[in-house]
Image (cartoon, rainbow over all chains, first blue to last red; front, side, top):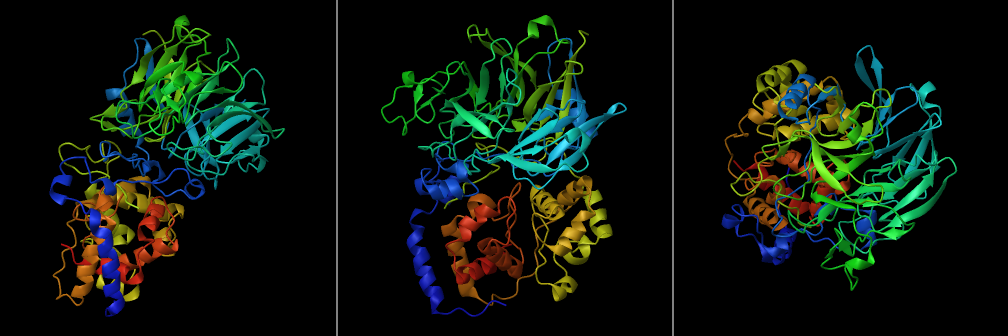
Length: 430
Length: 205
C-alpha cells in the first residue's frame, strides 16, 4: 500500500526538476536517430571503477548521435529448433560448387570455440556458464553439458589428454577428460590474467609448433581507453607450467587465431573500436612476425586512422599494420588454416575465418565464413566469401563464432552461437 | 546514466530484432498456460488473478509483454539465474518449445486494461511522470513504456510488482542479464520516486 506523500516528495520533485534540462523533443526524436546530446551515453572509459565494475551497457560508452539506435543483439532465449534450422540453412546458405552444408548438431544453447579431443569427442565452449562435449552415437552427434558453473568459458584447448578452459581470468585444467566425461574435475592452473570482464572473454590458439603452449588474447576493458596494464595484448601461455610471455601488444578484441603451419607464426583476428560509424574502422586480420609487435590500439585503427582522442601525437606508421582489413563491423572471431585433405588442393593452407556480424551498425554485415589466401609472409593476400547467408532482411538468424577442421575427414565445422548449432561443410565435387 | 533507445519500429531505424527464427505458437502457448498452471496466477487474459494476489502480491500481469522478454525471464527462472522458488519450480517443467509458445501467447494478448479507479494519489502520478521523463525510461522501454524485444512492458503493470521490481534492482536482488543496467538507472532514485514511478506506470493504458 503506497503511503501518503510527505514534504520529502516535494523536495525530490525539485531535485529532479533540476535534471530535466535536457528533455527530448519527443515528436521528432522518434523519426530520426539523432538525439539531444545529453541523452547519449557517456561513460569515462579510463577509470578503475569502470574497468572493475562495468555498467551492463559499458559498450555504449562512446555513443554518438549518428549511431544512436544501434545495440547488441538480444540473442535467442532458446536455440532454433532442428527442422526449422535445416530449412533456413537449405534456403539461405551459399557455398562454392562442390561443397555442401548440414546441421551436425542443434539445440546447443551456446556454441563458441570448438576443439577435438584425441578420441573424436568435440568440446565446445560457451558465452555463458558451461562447456559441452559432443560425441557421435550411430550417425547422430549427441551433445552433453559436462562442465557447469563457470562465468564465460569461451576459450578451450586440448593437450596431452587434458581439457583446458579459459574463463575470463582463470585457466582450468580437467585432467584425462576422455576418462572423466561424467564428472570432470577442474583445477586452476593459471590465473595471472587481469580480472576485467569487459573484453575479458578468451580464445585459446594452440601453438602447433610447441604443444602445451597456447596463444591467448587479453582484451582491454573498454571500447577505447588508455588501457590498464596487462590488457590489449597477446600472451603465450603454458597452462601446465603456469608460465607465460607477452608476445604482442595493441590489440583490441581478438577472439580467434591460428598458427600458420608453413611458418609457425601466429595470425589472429581483431575487432576494431565502435562508434565511428557504419563504415570505419575496419576489423582486422593480423600477422605476428616480430616478437613484441604493437598493432596500434588504442592509438591507430585499421593501420591508417589515428584515433580522434587517443592518437596522442602518435603516427600510424609507428605500429604494425594489419595483414588484411576484413571490413567494418564484420566481427571476425574464430579462424583456422585449412590442413585437411578432403577439400580441393587450392584450399590447402588457406584461412577460414568466422565472421559473427557486427552490432554497431544500421546495415548488418558479416555473419559468414571467409576464405583468405595468403603467402607465408602476408603478401598476395585476398579474401572472398566462402559460406554466407546468415543475414536475412537485415537480421541475423545465425552468427558463426568459430571454425575447426575435423581430423577425421577434413570437413569444416562451424559453431553458431545464436541459432545454437554446429554446422558441417564437406566437399564431394558434386 | 542514460540508456539508449533500443529499437523503434519507425522508417529510418532498424526493425525489432525478434523472430526470423525460433518463433512460438500463441495457440499452443495458450493451451500450455492453462495446463501448466500459469493462468491460475497470471490470468487467462494476462491479468493477475484476485485469487493469486490474495496469496502473493508479487504476481505480475503478463498481457502484451514482449515475446523475447517473457522467454528470457522463463529461461532465467529455469536456470536459477533469476531467483524465485515458485517460478523456478514452474519453469523447470517447461521445454524450449513451451517457452517459445508461452512468449508468443502472452505477447499476443492485449495490454491489461482494467477500468481505472479514481486516482488515489494524483501527486504520485505527477511525480512519477516527471521521474520517468528525467530518467529516460522510454529510451529502453519504449515511447509508451510498452517494452520491446527483451525489455519488459511497464504500462499497465501492477503497482505493487513494479515497486518491488525497482527495489529489487536497487538492492541487487535481481541479478540476471540486464539487471545491472537497471541497477544503474535506479541508483539515484529514492523510495518516494520509486513509489511514484510504480503508481504512474501502473495507471498507463
